[in-house]
Image 1: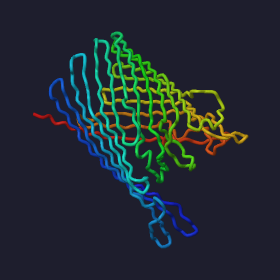
Image 2 (image 1 turned 30 degrees about the horizontal axis):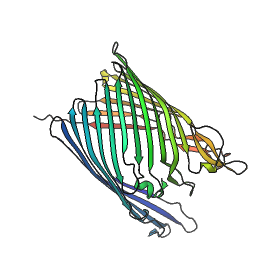
Image 3 (image 1 turned 135 degrees about the vertical axis):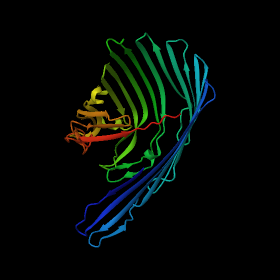
Length: 435
């Protein structure tokens, strides 16, 4: 990947000069995958990858009167930032018996970085060994437990990270799925040290980030109706609960009105229900889904603020639907996708009329998104796809959060999309049968 972004600065009419910036990025990704079947019961799978990312920042002072450019000398204005990542993973799958399959393996992840905008030359390495299993004590029960053992070079990882997934076939058309997982995530180097500042971004790293820990529970009840007159219908009702400690999040930095950074949320929880439906009839496919999700967040400095309400969870709904229909006569499939995102509340900080620090609820307004596509086959080699994205031309939605810190501020707009767009794509696929 090669990217060259040029930002022309505004003219200073006192000296007819401007500060121009250029950001040149190159990323090379290399990956090798291999597998070997020792027997029907024993297989080996391995992957190794290496990514090299370099981003050069060049800042010049352009003189419009003389037509000259001079390199500036400000901090970070002439910089080369480098990131390297290495991943190695290998695993064995061994079928002990029809009732038991084991999958042990090892996993190594390494990141390093350097540059004027990087603090020092940091390196983070994760070493992990894992083992998972698939247990089928009876035909209608499937249990998949797993254990992961991690050694992190910077952060204290738990001695063991467990997970378990289970499936119970209650009847021919009905099954129940339950799962639990403990989570650990150390901050990435870019979240810790990288300052990403250009014409479109102003993001700074936070070297004080802590590792994230979580407990996740989810379950679902899935039902598939018997097919009647070419009609197939299935439905799924699920629920989840996630409990985070030191969740890594992204928000406006306190050091600058337009600067963003990463921070830890002392305590965060998400919970909700999800309903999904799918219907198929001849050439018609339709889906419809609904979710209602609650959010809870407690910052480290919540104790310093007066909370203006007693709500523990803030809730937000979401609807999605799609319908596709194929017309054989013209070898074309038409698809319409729709999503409604309900009003999303969140706690933000501000001041009241008495000048006291308060926590209050701000809301991002609800909005609708829709896409339309048509896919047609010209011949056995060529397929054409065309359509419209963001049919309703949604750009920004209102947010009642106060940009100046006062709860009496009317808020501002939140960018959702660049608006309606049109696209066309051509796909060429050539297959040659081997003798």
